[in-house]
Length: 216
Image (cartoon, rainbow, N blue to C red; front, side, top):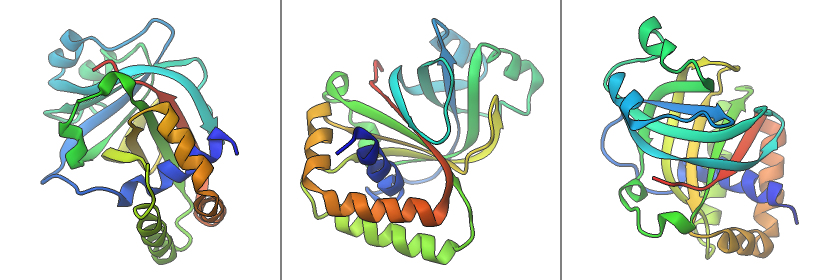
């Protein structure tokens, strides 16, 4: 069974797993190529604070991000992409996505950070059956939560604006405590993967799963 199917399962269900923390914040998810990255100084200069960042080692899905190497997730005091001066400070980015961020309780825990396998899911929905999509998500989430070794959700970005590529509906940040746990979950849960494949076909027009680690 491929890693690709594992990523689909994890990404689609992240929005219904875990307990959300109170409130929402304006946030940015930024993608970089090569040696480009986002320094804390640059983030601070535009009124943002980095929550998670690190390298991207692989990607899967129907939407490709060429030359992708790094990601950063940060909260910001004010909208950035609508501000020309602030936007210029992100000129080295491949893409940036902005919107309201919901953080789950797991975002407060950084124990074992270096060992985690992180996944950022970019999701594009067809919106042809929203009620059915929500029902399917709830059913899949309830099913997965009964299984050992499932992913842990950190945050969910409801995207309002984008730069550098087409605007996704959402960006989900999740992780497994280790790559071995991700593989074990996949191998033990073929039935969930089959149901997720059906969900993909019914409700998504495009998706990308970006696989990496976190250095902070």
